[in-house]
Length: 147
Ligand code: HEM
Image 1 (cartoon, protein in one colour):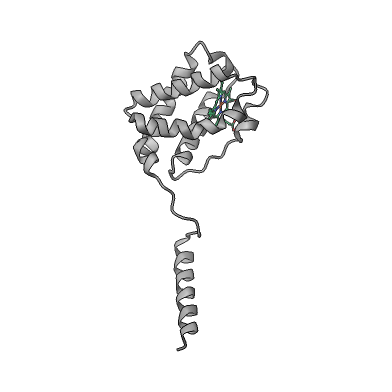
Image 2 (cartoon, protein in one colour):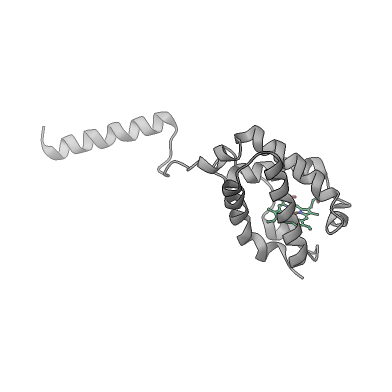
């Protein structure tokens, strides 16, 4: 067999094996942060507590008067799982559409981030991992804060 024929055979075999595994050409996700957050059950737990803290926080609770809290909790957990490299795909609205017209200001954004950090700390998430998740949310500031 000629070298070019070998190369074609190897390429075909590789292609077949990745297709059989249902893999794409994308590099594997780095799930280290997801693991540090406690995986799906850890994320569910601190997201639930996060919303309890938010709904008791006089600085921002009124913003959630008309919210569907159960739905929001599910979407937030899904978003945190996705952002941290876990096996989830966020299925909610994009951050601009989700917060349009709410008139959220910087102080309210910071209050929410603080509440999330408290919830993670209570759940035993390390401050390093907590800071990493917060740093993934920080770029959303421009879509969320409109006031
Ligand atoms: C980085 C910061 C934030 C993230 C990651 C975030 C995430 C989300 C997500 C995933 C949703 C659901 C989207 C959907 O309906 O499909 C949502 C909705 C919402 N968010 Fe945020 N949010 C952030 C900041 C804030 C802030 C600062 C406030 C108010 C103080 C806020 C108030 C709300 C409200 C009221 C809803 C609508 C809930 C409903 O209609 O049921 N969010 N947010």
